[in-house]
Amino acid sequence: MSQLDYLVKGGLVVDQGVIRRADMAIANGKIVTVAADLAEAAKRTIDARGKYVLPGIIDAHTHPVYLDDLQGTSEAAAHGGITTVIHYAYAKPGTKLMEAINQFRQDGESGSVLDFALHGGLFDPKHQAEEIPMAVAAGVTSFKMFMTYAKLKWMTDDYQLMRTFDIISQAGGMGMVHAENGLATDYLQDKYLQLGRDPKEVFVATRLAVLEAEAVNRAIAIAQVAGCPLYIVHLTASEDVEVVARAREKGYRVFAETCPQYLTLTSEEIFGQGALAKIGPPLRGKQDNQALWKALAGGVIDTIASDHAPKQKTKGDDFFAAAYGSPSTETMFPVVYDAGINGGELSLPRLVQVMCENPARIFGLYPQKGTLQVGSDADIVIVDPALTHTIEQKTQHSHASYTLYEGRTCLGRPILSMQRGEVILEKGTLHTSPGHGKFLRTDTKDGTRGFFAKKKQEQDKY
Ligand SMILES: [Zn+2]
Image (cartoon, rainbow, N blue to C red; front, side, top):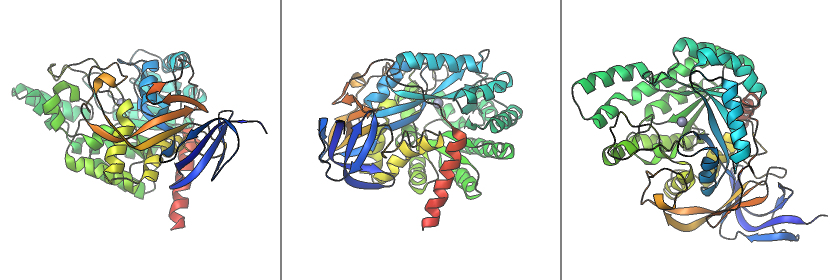
């Protein structure tokens, strides 16, 4: 038998709903054995005693088009224990969808340090939707539209939403929405700004949770009529959770994502940090943080992703002129681990489900990614639960000049990660090179079907 590349010894392996003490043998980029007390020779043995061994984290929501490009986003993500990223290939108005997809894939293949997949981002579905079957054939099977940002001319109206979901459904893909009622928001914003009110107050007062929940419900209804699976990105509020829970009870193929910022920050940040904390949808209240944690633990929300979108701005910028978005991929795992696990909100197996297994399943990357089974890619992250660190912009790897978590101390940190059986991160240093990452084809048709088959299995067990 040929020698192993790595033996990971004595760790607590978290996978498939359980935590167990097991060793892991790795050869030729794959996991070859997971069992107690392995004694085979390996080129390197890693002592994982007292540490958790997790599948590599998947960040299924990143925007590599601002201060961090595809390479920079993947490097920042890798520093946070992430091994797979799914970027939005943004097709702005006037751009062909396939042009955008081909460009992003090329940039990733030359620059990405992590394996990556792509979502299509449709800014003008009226002129872009006909390319969806081509995108599906090219391995890009999920497509996002904006139900808001009418003033930016990014909004998709209900006619185009219905038409595009119909096309996606027939092509075997999955729809995605940024759900907020854009026109109602715009009216309120115009009205309040005319009254001369503080822009930060106007921002909070015009992006109401009920207008988000309304859009979530509308998207679910339209997708259901089209027979199209739907993934709702970045849920922020307890009102959204109620709507998604009702759709799930009816057996609709609806998936929901939230982000670290909606779990751990509130609209207080907008008043303290000004334009830096301008993100869309907005940060909300404490009770929303709590409702989202509960929905994650209870199975209504399926995934956590970062919405990494670092922009050039300062605290004092004109609030409405400033761009939406903040850096968040590198801080995602430590922040969620500390608040979720140490805060008692989630079990560690459930955390692995929402940050590894579920995104892999939904996007059809499972069991190559998202799990530590024999035959899976050896994408692993070793977490030291006793290691404390304080988040500071100056030690972050994004090109953003700030982090919303400045000064936050987190207990628990990734200390080593591997991509396909090679160590890519060790004690804060990256050992990888641009172009190391491989393009991954998603398959949401198989993925969404498999996800619900497994859910049913779990329910039948009890
Ligand atoms: Zn986003």
